[in-house]
Length: 128
Ligand SMILES: [Zn+2]
Image 1 (tube, rainbow, N blue to C red):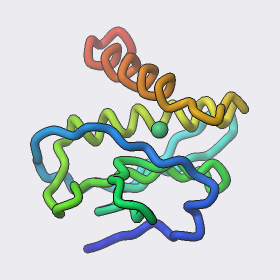
Image 2 (cartoon, rainbow, N blue to C red; image 1 turned 90 degrees about the vertical axis):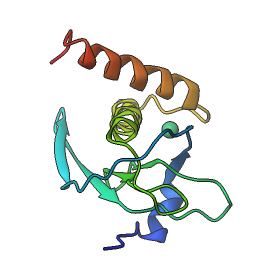
Image 3 (cartoon, rainbow, N blue to C red; image 1 turned 180 degrees about the vertical axis):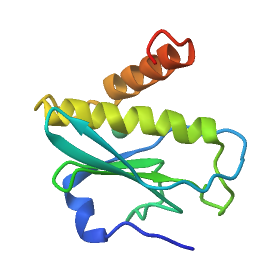
Image 4 (spheres, rainbow, N blue to C red; image 1 turned 120 degrees about the vertical axis):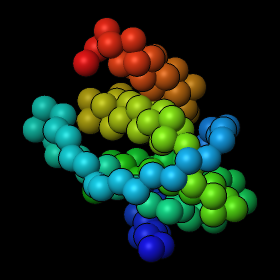
């Protein structure tokens, strides 16, 4: 089933584009998390629409407190779970920084670095 993000939400969010890898197929339920009283939802969608030609792996809606994660590439092939996990880590960093009012105009390098570090620490079971 094709599930799209409401385009009216796109004005309040940033696009996140990263380089992908090989495909596997996930079917994932929405998830919830709480950041010090701020309730967030993670939704998994087939694609995240953009107005330009770029591909969007994930999207953080700071107003609606919704993280959207694309599960398919631009050709409709499922993205690997490892890619979805990295995207989730990345978008959660946006949520953490945004909830703490630390969002900058171009925080993509910082967010990507933090997301990869947290994911790596979880992989090493330093953080559980
Ligand atoms: Zn981003």
